[in-house]
Image (tube, rainbow, N blue to C red):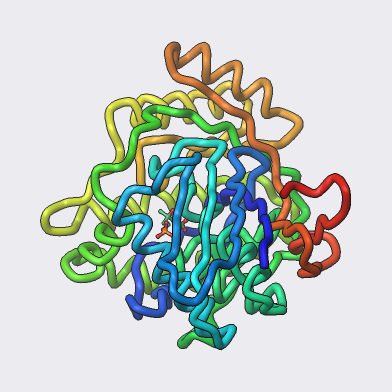
Length: 342
Ligand code: PMV
């Protein structure tokens, strides 16, 4: 009847950019990410009576209309899976900035999928929870799992889901450089569509994905941090290149982003291994070895005064109070009991 879930954002090292099916959110390509231990979303879903409309609150106030409509559509889908027309009340809050290219939609829909499926009494496997989260936001499919996760593009609703990367042998962290915490000028959904429909660089972006993903998986397996970093940075730049080729161009990166890219390259020249990745916003996330995260943060803060830097270690998968979705290690964990958030 009521369940609370906590989910964390993830940042892709091999990016998802472009859908082949807009309604089901089936991506053109597979992607691979690291779930972070900062900026969780906490979401409670409680069932209401049959006839009521869904209620969607963010930080105690009604969620802005367009976002609330998206949540309501998602709840309709969950209710349909549960064979009911009962409405639900959603109360959600993000510990980090919303809509700023810091993966709030990933943590948001992962938490909503877990809380809603539990509240509606669906007993979903982690894979099915990942498929459900995908329907809200593609990247949310990966936040079901902790650590590194790969979202297999698949070809339909059943075959498009994320799963943990169990054989990664690197201890990575990210230093988040908050160039601008404001909401992005164009949603990733609209920007992706424009890229797919108009960018001459979309086809090569798609064509190079399988090899890049295979290189990445191999580098993770070998524990080759340098290769993981180099593949990540070029993958982010290629995604932005594909967007820049759209008509009209999609440009999320700003002068502040470029200054940070220079600062990260300079760190490498001084022997501190760091690699940049950027999503649908100007913020730059710097991948580094976990043991060197504090040094990387300090060096970047010295190079870019005025920008806030946050260290993010690898984080856990989604957790749900009072419902038993549970996978050992990197998967979702149940946290029922006296200490569980309600
Ligand atoms: O899931 P969405 O619609 O928020 O898209 C996320 C797209 C990127 O963050 C830019 C890349 C990714 O794979 O997370």
